[in-house]
Amino acid sequence: MASRITVQEAAERTRNGGSALLVDVREADEWQAGHAPWAVHLPLSALGAPLSPDVRGRPLVVVCRSGNRSRQAAELLVAQGVGAVDVIGGMNEWARAGLPLADAG
Image (cartoon, rainbow, N blue to C red):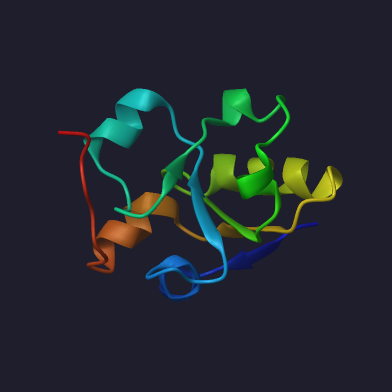
């Protein structure tokens, strides 16, 4: 079972070149509506494909809208031998906490 972390912990681990990579597993329309400025977009539907070496070689912090898909994605990644945790409350909680958001525009 993958570990879960708060949005504050996720921001600390991933921002400003942190040791972990923030991976947003939402679909394109959700990503475009607002995401963490330093996140990488990798929809849950694409996680069946092999991860690129730069993604696979780092600890991953996985986020979605509410925490359901990210939990699923983190479990899938852990089963593949990738170090991954998911973010409790997802981007909904990220926004409530006042953490930075960017859009695709």
